[in-house]
Length: 372
Image (cartoon, helix red, strand yellow):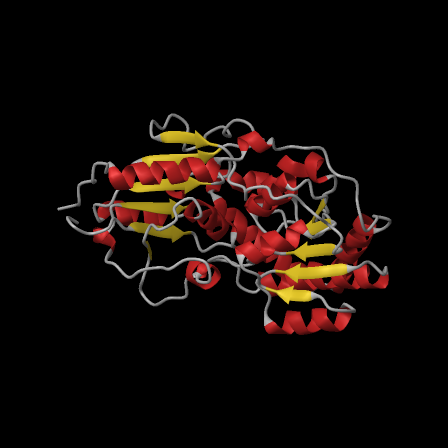
């Protein structure tokens, strides 16, 4: 790489949009650094789709990179390490993992996001690792919340490698009833955000009166949307919860879509003031707990199957709607500010990871040996 500007190779897990959001915030700390996305094989890349308006990505072979940033994707981290590129790994969900396959085998630096969830669970594959550096939460820099726009509803990226028909089932079970309940109650809705299919956008537009922004937003646009919100009704993804907590934006958490959202809802229940849990006829918490030691994929198959099955049963759909109605009934359009759970001085995770990458670009980390 003599005479060439150092290139950062970047990869984010294609599961929802949280990993892309974390990637965006770290890249904001690295202005002017050329970034090549991995993989660059022509497949749709959420990072390219959501961040192209903000960054200039370059084409470069992976082995030209001086360092890689990988967010929540152990397979990509192991692949890049085998190419001989040192990896700075960002794990925003260290409390989630239960098996060795869910974390990379070896990386140059393992940045694990600290948070209010306490110690690692018993049997964590991260226990005893010598390459972990604990970092502060990765949250957009606070710019203050002005409020006044109304309610924002968010369901996030809605996708994973196993989700199948459960994404559409979730929208029919949860999102459309929430929209109807808000409209019937005369509650002002500013935006419904998420990776929404065309049919859902049409149905929402028909249900919600007035000008409502419906559909996907870039991370920067979503940040601006939250600053104008009075209340957030959201799936319990950690990135969105942290953003709202940093803004002291009142939240109602929707029934969780996956394992990490179940754990997030449990962790942040007090701060979010209210969690709308699934009725027992949809999801059995004891079964989730029983399956957890087998790993995230095993639990996801159960959760997605339960959501898809519930959407096909009229009596269960009615029970879900009743639970949602109870959760939003009587809530004022402008809610009380929740108890602070994040101190502004302890939201510097993106800056910490960015500093580590800059060090690696200009004082290179040892390059891992490539397999023979």
